[in-house]
Length: 385
Ligand SMILES: *Cc1c(COP(=O)(O)O)cnc(C)c1O
Image 1 (tube, rainbow, N blue to C red):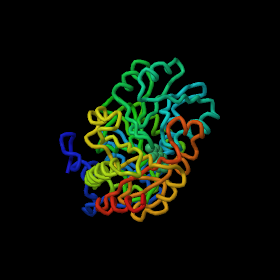
Image 2: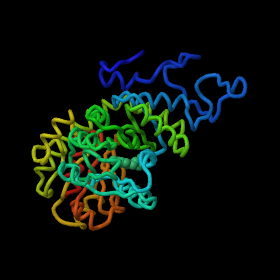
Image 3: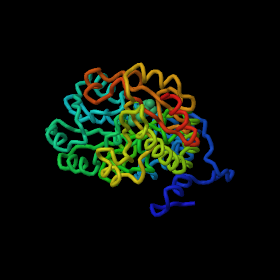
Image 4: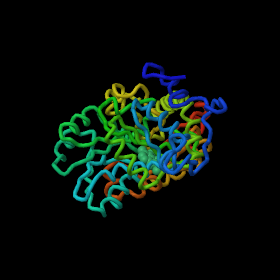
């Protein structure tokens, strides 16, 4: 079944990039577990494929599916989210500068500063919610803006369209890490971004069983450059991972709807809880950018950050007591997770920067899963004591 832009997200999630196997009619895209492809004569390939680092049919189906969900023409998949991120950075040269959101995933911060910094690519941290700060940071050397929205873990919202206008005016590439929102809640390309990045490890995979990344763009030239780096560096996903992700994207819309519903209920409950100082969730009216979130996203996702009353001791006690909320890094799976950013996911961010961002000892991050919400609320209540 051919799908078009006019079809609903759920229809595209299930059908885009998919077709019955031409030789058997198998409805599911087969796992083409092969490294190479037989040629009729030297250089004369039978189909479209010659070697699986360059391209593989299972991966191609996934790349087409993800591109469609993001409203993009071209998709590329990688062995991890940070592998995808590194490929974008390899578009740059020594002496170039990047404006990086000051509140991005810890591993992204580390990659920009400690790996690409050594190659002479300078990273400047900017609060992307402050458009004047973005404009002020711009100069001739800036070649790339990289942002996340909502951010991690303080769930700040950036006006993608406004930053895209600044990027365009300065001839700078805008890349948006859309991992937290997923294509179901936000399509950065439609708002003017040049590249969308995903850690498919999180909501897109959704079952905490694989590591992967993706890049999507509408620009044929940018796509060719990214594809060349993908081929040359080789950080491609395994074929089984591609198959697992194709399975996952078919239920992305259903999972996201439940993540959003559950998270809203949990956020409202915690906001009224006597042991909780404050709750950050873009769906709450108390979120400083609630109006922008409403305008940019049809739902607010499954991530909640809370400041509990007390300090490290109280946080530790809560994280040791939850039962359905497993204490673990990562997010976006069907099962609920709880973590302590200062000690866990954001340990690689320097302490002074953590303090500036409000990543304190009483800050706890929740990835609200799709279990029965009454059980999740009861679990948090007993853990808060
Ligand atoms: C996890 C994550 C990444 C990195 O992805 P990996 O798949 O772990 O390499 C990048 N960005 C965000 C927002 C993430 O949550």
